[in-house]
Length: 283
Image 1: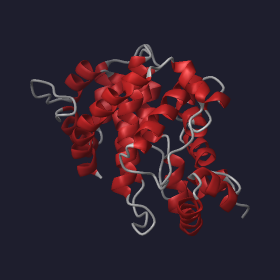
Image 2 (image 1 turned 90 degrees about the horizontal axis):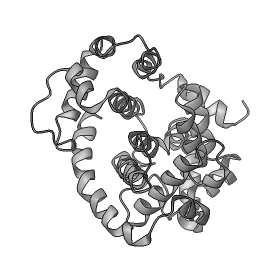
Image 3 (image 1 turned 45 degrees about the vertical axis):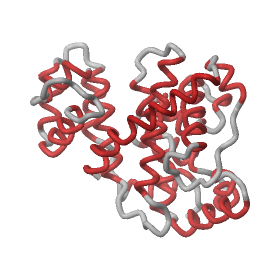
Image 4 (image 1 turned 90 degrees about the vertical axis):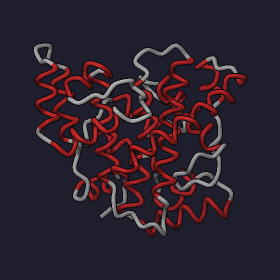
């Protein structure tokens, strides 16, 4: 078998099924005749998922003043798109299990992902982007290709992690040398195979090189900056012991002010504990 991003994804798909409830809900949302009851009915066919979602929306991360007891109420309060994104997030968290702890500390991996998600949503709001919840899920899943690599070729992943750590290079450069491609190519291949939105495919592929993005350069730029910010603190890590290089064009595209950053990172620090406490108990 020739080693390629697609071959790793095909191997991974034998172990990790696509998030079917998410796909069903996406189709429903595109149907103008569908109702909140239709969407609730799909979610309620999976009682474990419905319980998880209610636990998340009732958590301190959202901080709603009164208890939300039904999925239809949750949809009314946080919206169909945000609830659907939570379904995707919990599906991914529960899919990638069995990755060796000797390779990567998965709590650290998810901490980095959660921090990237929160920072991406905040940066998008700072830049005046509407529908900022899509940036949250883009930040959460930007390194999903790394999980496929860790799961399917752990020995090559270990080689890349060691090479990056001791050779003073970023992980995607080490992956390129070890495999001929990196986690961004694998992330794009997986999000395509899972039929996730094009914006998530482009962020997975171009979060280290946002200027190369095709349709969703702003999404890629937001996650690019968020990833760098949370790597510099750091909030967890995804196997990379170095902060990725900044694409100055991404900073200029977003029109950010460096004085906004310390407060943003303080907000991430506050929110990450709340998000971790509810998401990681499900993992």
